[in-house]
Image (cartoon, rainbow, N blue to C red; front, side, top):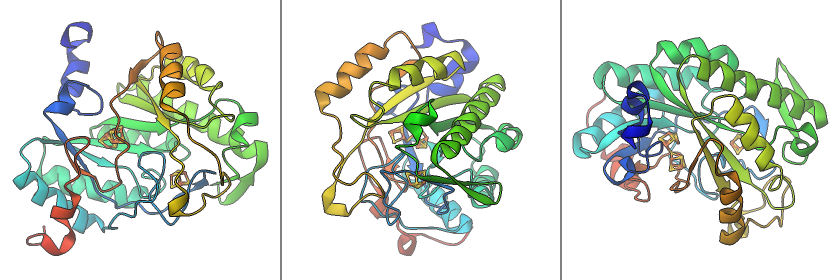
Length: 297
Ligand code: CLF
Ligand code: SF4
């Protein structure tokens, strides 16, 4: 609550439904799916659907151009008075697809200067963008960090694309890990609030997430959100984790209990879609599809 946070931090979280558990009863967020490109392959991702780092599996968002995205934000702002946050969380990676992410935020900030800007990324393209993120007043960044040990990473990431080439095996995970930590450190040093999402994959990184929690806490992460892998055979096979089960509710809460004492845990995440609209747990996206919007911005 307000009492335990410095005033400048409280000012940033009091109306953000993901960063403040209290706020999620009163404030709404929306996502626009303007960033389709992605630079890594997670084994739990089926590329036909939205990024699984910050959404449920099996969901395909309406992909928008930055202009269409901004138009949608204005339409939602006009009819959802609780709207306080615009997030870009895919359907690919918001930092790798930076030109579209930046253009969308810039168009919206011109028209709605008070809306909070939030983005979600796998972190690979993050370090070089930190100055721009700060300059654009993006106060909230989520980095999905599933490992801090390349041996664990190898089982989660078959490849990454960086520096004009593809990396595989342990080298890929080592590079991803180094860049995630660098991005996290640079953001927290500049006062950006960083939430870390970790996808809990039984038998692969479940025990390891305690070490992840220690390392991201040491680097200033504001929140740690453990997201249960949702395996959903109805929506096709993920890239390399076919048949992998997700954790049970009991396994998830046991891990969360073991992590108490590190970065504050987020326990009210609803694993929303890359085009979610409304209060958490509510999805009003279908009321604001492109064909229902008003005039261009
Ligand atoms: Fe969206 Fe994520 Fe920003 Fe929230 S969601 S980009 S921090 S505005 Fe929130 Fe949704 Fe959970 Fe994400 S409930 S999936 S944590
Ligand atoms: Fe899929 Fe991973 Fe890329 Fe998200 S970051 S779109 S889960 S491969």
